[in-house]
Every structure is written in structure tokens, then in C-alpha cells.
Image (cartoon, rainbow, N blue to C red; front, side, top):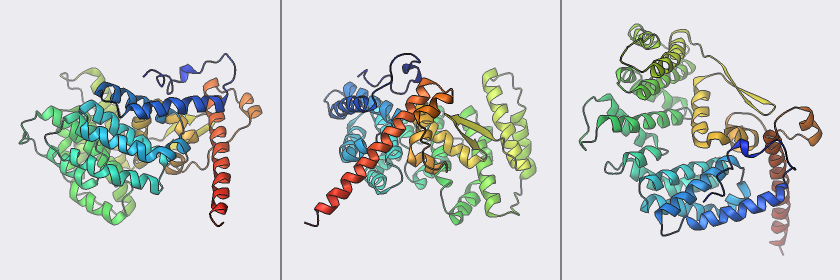
Length: 383
């Protein structure tokens, strides 16, 4: 199970030593991945979970479009089986792999097919009050309706009917709210308006929650809703603006002695930005570097999208920003930048970054060859 342990670790590519043979490395990788896919059917739950984690590690740190395309149904079946039959940790790992599978496949019909297969299974667990909190939290990529039905319970301060402690439920509510917010960013404007009318006056109540993550999630969602509301209506007016800004300012300057210093610093930092967004329509632009490229995060919608993919891809985020066509399309980065060896040497970038560009170039060559093979196959069908 240790073969994939170094895939997402940039330190595993040292500055010294010979250049990697990309084709040989790719063949070796695919051989190992085939083994991991087979192990997702193992009788041992521990072995299945380890195989799922190894596949997640590989999918987050490599572009494997052709390999996955050929095996997408097998992978989908394995994920479905692990979600249905597995326990909490295995279900979480399988749900995470499902997300990575769609990131790898992009926004085409293949991802839609995967979602149509796994959607009902995920939806069932999301709505199942008897399922473990961890499994329900990990499998929140379903419909907005399901997500709403979960986080609106956070508006109520009483414990739920299942008798589960409010602390555990809050973790689930936070995940549901953040996933719902992400989906809201791609909704048509008429739907966005409906959601804003439904939730904008209720969300401020969550700013008083005892849980730091819920307060932050509610604050960032409010900032995003205000941003969307002003995009749809330049004259947007919020009746309770004074009361809301008072709450936000209190959180941005909170000196409560009963809270940990780290929590207070994090809260103050987030709510200073939220207050600026709500009160001044301002956003503190951030710059993300990956290789020779730069991406500017200049709005709450883009920030929410970036943070979601970063959580899914982990340390593989930079690699996917450089090489993943789907991710580059989401962030409007254009086609992957192809640099020759001479240019790479003059750029003074690390060995690991050079490896990323070599991998991207190898992927491009493989895709070009695949297209040629497809054309030959198409010609043969007419004879």
C-alpha cells in the first residue's frame, strides 16, 4: 500500500540525480494503479480503504485522463460498492475518490455518467440520519436541495430528534453549507435571487454559533451572497445592514478571553475581510503562484471555488492548476503552458516544477497520439 505514498510529496523529487524517464515512469505507475483498483474489491475492509487512499494520492498528484477514461466504469463500480458496503472511513475515502475522478474527467459527459451512477447513493447517505456523521460529512456533493435540508437545521438551536450532540451535527452543517455555497456560484441568476431571498436574513443567526468553523462559514457565505446580490442588482438594499455590520465588526475585533488565541486571530482575520465585503464592497485580492504562472483570486466566488478544489487535491493543487484542462477551464487560465527544456533551465525553477512541466508535455504527446489512433479507428469502421 506504500507505492503511492510519495506521489503528492514535492520533496520526493530531489534536486540531484538523473532526469526521470517519463514513459517508463508512467508505465510503472499505471501497473501499480491497476493493482490498487483490483484491491478495492478485496474482502478486507482495511485493504480496500488503503487502496482507495492510494488511488486518491495518485489522482491528486498526476493527470491520468487516458488511464481513467479506459477504466472509469470499473472505478465507478468500485466506488459505489465501497460506499454501499463500507463503514465510515471507507465511505469517506470512496467519496473523496469520486470527487477526484470527476476532477480528472473534466466537465464532459463521462463525469455526468459518473454522477448519475453515484448521485443516488451519495444522496441516500446524506439524507440518512442513522449514517455516521463522518460519512455524511464527506458525501455532500449531491443536490442543493439535500444540502439545504441539512444546514437549515443549524438555524434551530435545539438538538435534533436523533439525539446526536449539537457539536457533531455542527460539523455536518458546516460542510453542507460550504458545499451548497459552492453550487450556488454556478446557478442561473434567477435561482440565485431565490436563494438569496430565502437565506440572507437567516444566515446572520449563525454568526452567534459557539463553533468557530460555523461562524466563519456563515460569514464567508454572507460575503459571497452579498457579492452575488450586487451582481444581479446594482441597487441591492439590505434592510438590516446596521445590525449585520455591528455583528461583523464585533467578530472582527473579538477579544473574548474564553477563546483560544489562535481561534481569535483566525476569526478576526476572516471577519475583517467579510466586513469589508459587506460594508465597502471590497475584496482583498490574493495571488497564487504555480511555476511561472500567476492566478489572482479577486472575488468571493473565485475564493470559494479555489478553496474547495484545494481541499480535494491537497498538495496536488499546483500541479493540477498547471496541467489539468478542466481546472484551467474553471479558473479561465487557458491551455496548459508548454515550455521547452532550454526555457525551463533559464527560469530558475525547482526540479519538482520542471518535472511537472515534463509530465504535462508527456501528457500532451500521449493525447495527440490517442487522437491519431481514434482517427484511424474511425476510418476502419467504414470498411
